[in-house]
Length: 372
Image (spheres, rainbow, N blue to C red):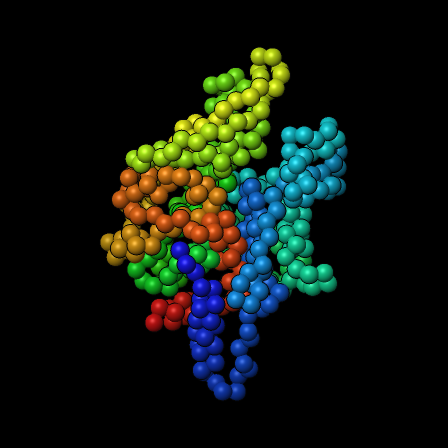
């Protein structure tokens, strides 16, 4: 899907200036978009940072992993890529931890260290961050939202806004969210999947499935162990999914293969195993079925007035949206055409960055004016 960020941002800025300057000529000129602002997709697997830079974005990505001392969890040893390399390989006195699980913050201290690192990457030395917008799963509780806001403030941001990942993804993907007909985002993240219907710039319906790409990886590990009696690492499973992955559907897709070195359960020695697309499809099947069930629930609640928009504007984002066969499977099951975003890994951060740069973009009068 083609997306012109310049047109989108200029339209928003124009609407905002008209709405907030017409009541009095003596009022101060509306502020332009804040330059030192960041959009952050604080994900279970990866954290993506987007910084507005003119009509484009500076994009950064780090693994959502923090390494700490076992006897002193507050002593952070590494964050991001360096910490990820320690997963499953640490000595007894070091723990490599993922601060988020199923898209939800499970360790506030470690999540704050991750966010601090993300902010350091997103700004130049000596700069400060006035505003950050963080995308979180749609069914997050108030406590979970407050936790995300808290770590943002304690990480050094002057102002923190938390928005639903699905809404951020729709903005980042350039969907016509201000229109009354409706659009839908299928955001398949590592820890959870958000199914979000948007109309008139706001969320009309949302369903969150607490399954995602991580669950597919775990299933690959289990199937390989059961089928070949070989243990493989979770990173190897993820790599195999990326290289040869597909989803069961009506199309006759090419079956690809890849080799991985694992540990024989019988001999405890290295053993080579071949993972093919069908194995990955089997591993993905329970998760895809949960997504289909969630979409069915959304369609059942959907009003007839929104069905045309959903038919014409449903987009999948997130890492696992890139699995071959996804759009065919959704169309097979639900008769809803599905497009895959051109940049599924970054649209949430991009959408959050747009809101961070144009903080009035989500206000009701702006959303309604954008429709006209």
